[in-house]
Image 1 (spheres, rainbow, N blue to C red):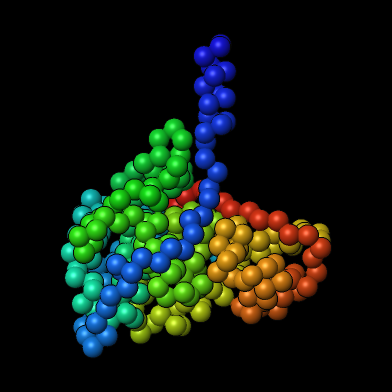
Image 2 (image 1 turned 180 degrees about the vertical axis):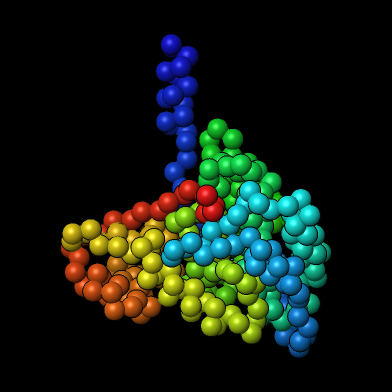
Length: 267
């Protein structure tokens, strides 16, 4: 009994609370050749998304349990090809799409490599459920890279586009949807705008409970990307809100935040 109490206390003390990393610029990754008009193929990822991602009510979910060994191998091969791509030789716009697709494909791979799991936080995390975000998964341009590196050392600081939070998927119900199609430099603006609007106008991002506005924790964790204060963050959300969402944004007295870490899986 004594040992059980000690174990429970240890878990209580050391089980980590999710903390979003800061955006940190690393000049190593800020290299490109904008004269290069070549494109990186994402056809293999498109095929995977088309086969295994489904729209279920207002959310897109993944049929992880249905992925065949053959299609898992194709996804692995696609990621390996991206890993071996000399990304610094491509244009900045091509790189942006590359990193977003790589992040999303890697996240799916993490789930499949650890499946079955109830949450991505269980992947590689063991008993403490620390999640896979700091695990070095690839070596790109001679440097080991994690999911956090891609999002917080590359995408956020180099492009400084807050819409990236609605384009990268963390395999959770509370997260913005996994895109149905790989993003490209040509589709970036339209897809980024639509993904932002779709999420902000979903119940996962915004709901009103009496006079309490319940927002996605994304707006709390990454508040620095959305505004300097609550008023600016609400203004940012309002910019993409439909009529129904704007009504909710105009009728609250308090704000709280929530996030659902359950796996974004078709059940």
